[in-house]
Length: 213
Image (cartoon, rainbow, N blue to C red; front, side):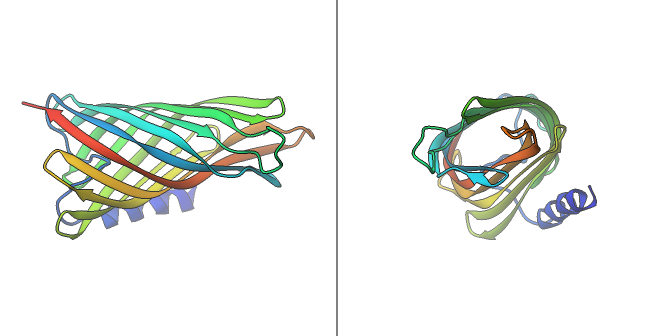
């Protein structure tokens, strides 16, 4: 827990200076909508078994309830390729609903519900219903270019983090690329042992905003 809190504080510190540009959002406008769409090159591993990477859809929508608060829905497929060619690859997905609060222009905190469907093939599967809290922060490193970090911890032994770069193409359009890591409880494996499962890999996408008062 101390290490997780230290990670959260580090992200806060990184985001302590400068303006925010690219996705994910840390500041909002009343009535503004952001649409995110991209790809997640996921690799899954549990215990001594891992699968090969596969590109998955990832995306979401964020709506500004006020200039400080937004609601958000995110979805990611968690599918991989079998490393043994036997078809026993992951076929799950992740869905989350969060309420976000802008602490300052480049820092936001959030909390909500995350549903991770772990389907590891071979008849083994477990769905986790997770309560989570997290923080998002960004800092500019060049004109229109910033570095971002996102960290969350939750029930079911869940830790999620993502870090990367975002580029502001226009006022309403961003592109971003980074690395995502998800670790959550997997339950009991085929041998009766308790394990966590992790999904990790490169992620990239586009974010488009419209509306607002």
